[in-house]
Image (cartoon, rainbow, N blue to C red; front, side, top):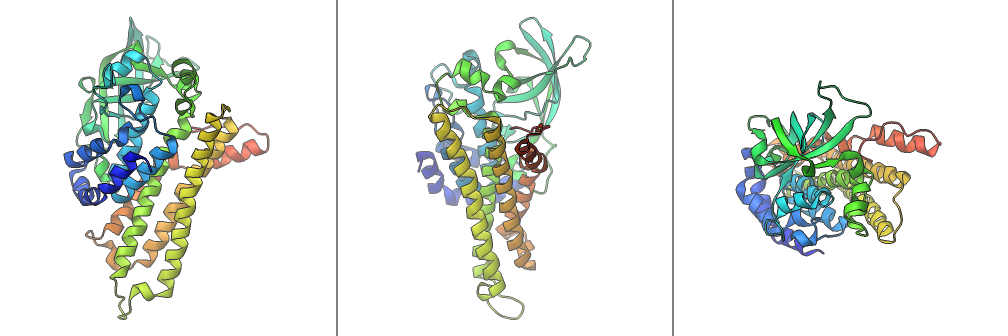
Length: 393
């Protein structure tokens, strides 16, 4: 077990206690964020020379799951914000020093996103003028920078073809967080608020070509020979979303056990002795174990291939995404089966189980958990057909 995972386990009770407070605040509380920083979650994939651990991907995903099982919002932010140091390890070294300090003295800098190409950038001397609005910037209140997706236009605002899609990295002073933009029924504590940028100047060294990120070109150029950063971006980011989702589902199972141990049915029998409850519990637990194994084994195998110097093919990437979306779906279906058996008392807001149920369904609305296009693309490839539109493969 990685030392960061061990620290998360030691803080498990405190993370659980903060979960309701995070939801009520509509953001991670300062206490939750401080515990996450002290544990080092966001630094797991960060380069060692900038105060990170350069941990194996599987260690990162296992830690995210452990955190999400205790506090879904914290696990979600840990997964999303925690993947950004991995990408930024591919960036211009000048940007890395701006983020983390010349020798990692600012190692705990957090960076929010999102990557959706909502922004529009116009080329000017030395960089770009950049504007746009992005929803779903998880953990934004605790981040000092943001990496935002955008498309470069010509001087008239038109988008040349093929589009030049880039990731723009901005300091907090260059964007606004819309504080009233996050009012939701699930994952409320993530504080995934809107970010607004108005004609900010972004110098060249604070941008990354989205194609070069996704196809590993920046990894070959800026981190040659380092297997961690040779992993495919689409699979790494999507698996962070899935790890959070699976962790929430595992937390739901734990909450169901606590709730059912003390539950008495309307006919006066113990729910824990009801054969229907027991049957559903066994099936759900097996499906959750299968989902966890499916995701982690896929990522461990891919990382082993990279360590061995093998190239990760499109086929392997598509298979990994297929496994990832299926693991999320299987886990959520298992939680639904438990919820169906839990009775009316489980709807009460003082029952953690209902919160986990809401949060896991909110997680399933993330683009990376949308399965149809992934299944279709993988299946088309099996028949030698063009894969069609790929979403973060």
